[in-house]
Every structure is written in C-alpha cells, then in structure tokens.
Length: 112
Image 1 (cartoon, rainbow, N blue to C red):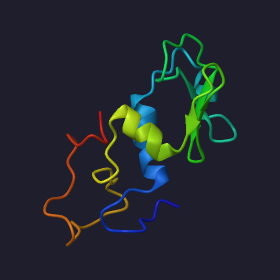
Image 2: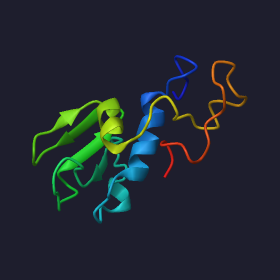
Image 3: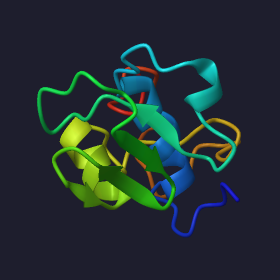
Image 4: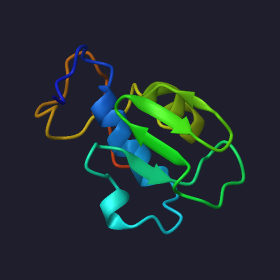
C-alpha cells in the first residue's frame, strides 16, 4: 500500500490523503472521518450540500446519495484540483526521482 506504480503518478491512497484535506466535513464526527470501512463522510462538492451523511469518499471512489454523483478517486481529485502528477508524500519518495525536474513542494496542489 502506498507504493507508486510509476515515478510520476500518485497512487489512489496518496490522492485520497490529499482529497480529505480539501473536503468540507460539514460537522461530520471524527468517527466518520474515516469510518470503520475507510469511508470519509463529508459534504458533496458537486452540489450545495448540507448533510455530511450523504457523501462518502474512499480509495474505492466516491458516491453522493443525494445527487447521485459517483466516480473514481481520480475524478474527485480533478474536481477538487488535486494534481495526481504532483501528489507524492515524502514517505514514499525518499530521494528526488530522476524522472522529475524538481521534487514536489508543500505548495503543490496536493497540499492545502
């Protein structure tokens, strides 16, 4: 888990980590962020949501039970402006990759 399949692309786990920092929890309790199944419950970023119990996101994807929108982690990352080409946690890339001109910084779209 967390291993990269290519030197220039983040895993779904990396993307989810960045996504949950951008989601509006809408008062969702800590026990639902994530819950026991790895689902993060928050307000849906696709509509004017007021109930964090309607939208969940995990490495398996996302689903809003109010508006019906669903998709992959990568689709949600795109919606929230998380760049999969720049989202690399330091624990997985101990040295700058020879495939990248510069290592990612905390100002990348992966971090808020």
